[in-house]
Length: 266
Image 1 (tube, rainbow, N blue to C red):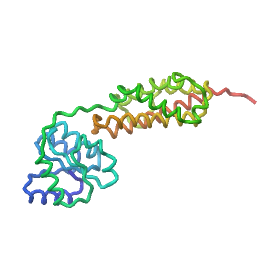
Image 2: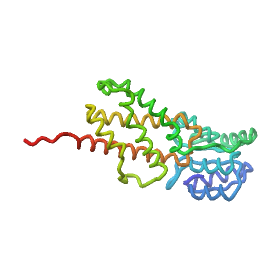
Image 3: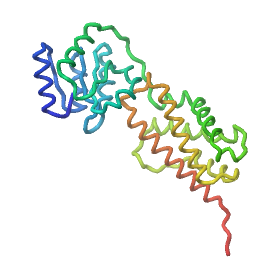
Image 4: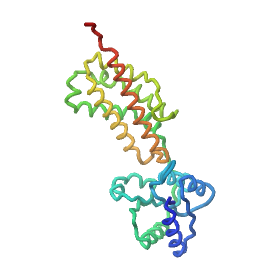
């Protein structure tokens, strides 16, 4: 699968000369339709595709429909190859463009020669991972906060410091399971309560912002430790939703925090 017609035609001609039967697709939707209606031994896909979805969506579709197919993913960014080792749980090989055709053909044949039967792969939605690992996420957040000199100037027990997090994470999990358009406003009980409590504890707005930043890092650390099971077909939109929801919670926390500041008439 590639959105560049000239590349598709070149690869098809070359692979057919190497005695492969080839079907091409120019979009994610076309590729998924072919995967649903045809049987393939090999998937060769570009990572970056226009429109809805990308190479991960196609890879996940193939893994669900035909877990025994060899899956090869092209990327034009060499540094990305080194940073995506865990993705090899779903992809047999990540190829950096441009790649010599002869080398690619040899790689396909080698992968087919050592073909092994793979059972259905267990995947989880991001929401399920965050719900299951809420306590490790909170522990990771608390560890990071304890190493922050500014945040630890305020003496609090662990329960006082983390008391707002379970509700915020539950609200985030709900947002992931009941999606709405990015930027849509919706009240957060946890964020409002957080702002009120932090005001009473003597926090400043920069401290609240730093706590929120650490929360996002902790959430993504949890996802990183679960890359072997995460459903990559929905990962991009889920990550965007996490960022949108955490930012929305932060805004509501700050509004609540400032609303509780005593007003003095002069």
